[in-house]
Length: 108
Image (tube, rainbow, N blue to C red; front, side, top):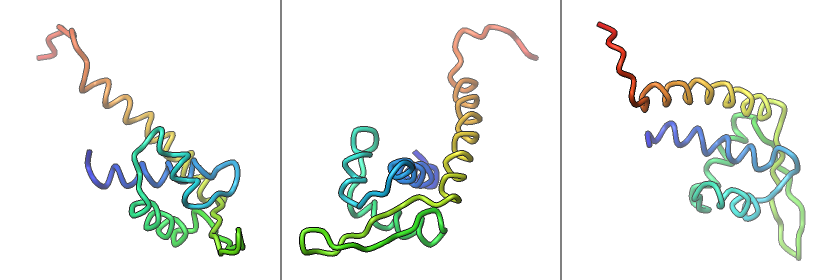
């Protein structure tokens, strides 16, 4: 898969993982893993990039004597998920065109 496309998909997956409630890195990985293989070394740069783009916000809180970062989606992040859904409709259409079989119509 094209690296830029995969990057965009992973960004939206992370946003989707926090769209209903805030979460932290390890939990985000656990939530995404059944669908997409993602590691900590991949996740944390994504989180920083999404924060820089104002698609999520971060708060720090103590948990079991350690500081933990909690990530929450912003309205702009929700908008990005909706944009992705519209973009994906077009990708599905393109996929169906490319993979069509049995179309014997001659369009010459």
